[in-house]
Length: 112
Ligand SMILES: [Zn+2]
Image (cartoon, rainbow, N blue to C red):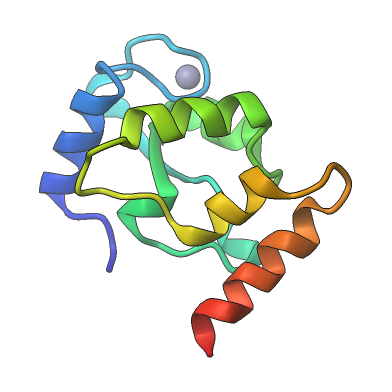
């Protein structure tokens, strides 16, 4: 389910009004960044989306989130109805060097 206006408002509250990547205030200029990029099967759902400046979103590009970013995301989402997309949990638990495989496997599992 795509991100609704209500979801975006809740994200803004959970992120303290700040860009997920640089931590600076983001306000109404926020864009939706997909933690697992859509180009790699990342879902267009609130559970895989954070708010970020356009430039931070573009700079992030098609990489996977770092361990530090994942930790922050899991903390922000704890107890929130926005949730955490299951492949992000698989990524967090992946062995170093095995991240893309773990993500691809978790995405395939969702489709079966
Ligand atoms: Zn930013």
